[in-house]
Length: 75
Image (cartoon, rainbow, N blue to C red):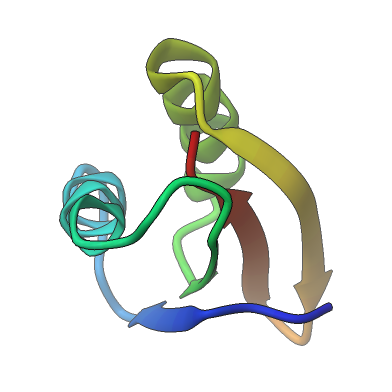
């Protein structure tokens, strides 16, 4: 999937992946896509809740070898 910016939250635990994702999205334009990589399994539920609460769109989330990869489109 094409993305405009990448943020690696590997090794961070809740709530840092969400806090840092929010900061990463702040300087992006509407419609742009952020790729987030996390290792905290709680991020799966948290990213969906974050997207729902902020109006950003969670385009996909996958797991690969203990890493959770999210693509979020800024509203």
